[in-house]
Image (cartoon, rainbow, N blue to C red):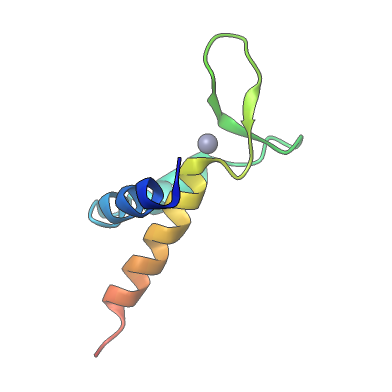
Length: 71
Ligand SMILES: [Zn+2]
């Protein structure tokens, strides 16, 4: 996922209340440096953590924080 895709996904997540928190809760390091949630499917190895969803949810939280801040 490139930076632009990540930014689009972050924006999408930021528009769904509670989603970034839920994603960060679900996509955790499984203890071996891999995401316990993301895998290529089947019995294949899980993706290295932080996975794309964590990076997008992180960016979404920054967007949400900016929006909450009083102007
Ligand atoms: Zn993940």
